[in-house]
Length: 125
Image 1 (cartoon, rainbow, N blue to C red):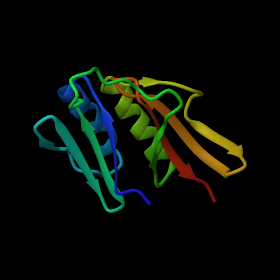
Image 2: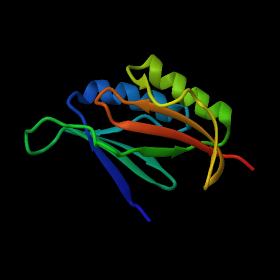
Image 3: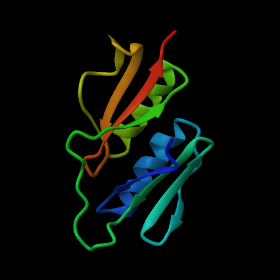
Image 4: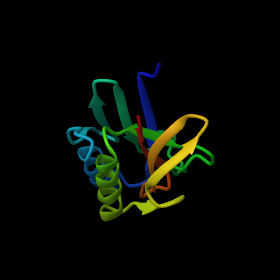
């Protein structure tokens, strides 16, 4: 459905350090730098982080969350730990199992250094 997702940052170096770590925990190679943007490539799409081209500060989406698929609860925990160790902050409940209308899932939530809300998700059998 999606070709890419792009979010803003106010500090490209800090964002690269954070996303290299959390996406590295998911097996994604470090960012490709293109001037005021960085790109992460996966078999299912592209994540880009950019300094806003209009010169205004980047702000986090209120109510927005970007979800990353994980192969196991252990991978979600590694993702979360990498994020906290590299300038992110934990949010929501601690990483763990949640049950709801979408079934049983293991979820871990973070905010990146710019305040964007992220989620690592593993769908459980």
